[in-house]
Amino acid sequence: MTIKDLLASREIENIFENSDFLYMLNQAAGDRQILAKQLNISPYQLKYVTSSAEGEGLLFFGNIIIPFKDKFDPSLKLYQLMTTKPEEVDEQRGSNTPESREENETGGVSERKPKPRRRRKKQRRQES
Image (cartoon, rainbow, N blue to C red):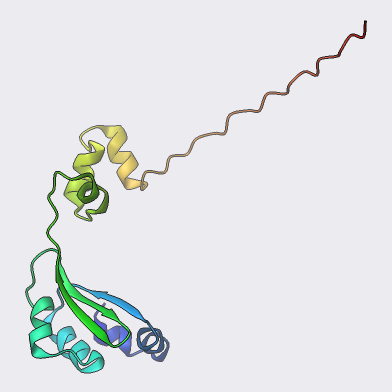
């Protein structure tokens, strides 16, 4: 689905127009032109979403547009928590085992039966 397809819906266009915060990464040529017109993106700012590298894009906060380039060291724990690259996520989960492949397919959710609750026996106090 493209930006053009999304903006064809009046409801989606309203959501888009009423958003105070947008995070835009690399965009296809046709989508870039639509977004540039819709969001008043300058040609200089448009470079950040034109064939941009990983971690480059534009932040929109109200009527402020901020170009950004984030470069994280892949060895950092923060990078490992934030990565959206499927191959890196698989590697972190150890996707070579059948169990981990199943976990990846289910999003890490496994069907486990709840443990039965034990009833505590009430201890009677002996009065002396």
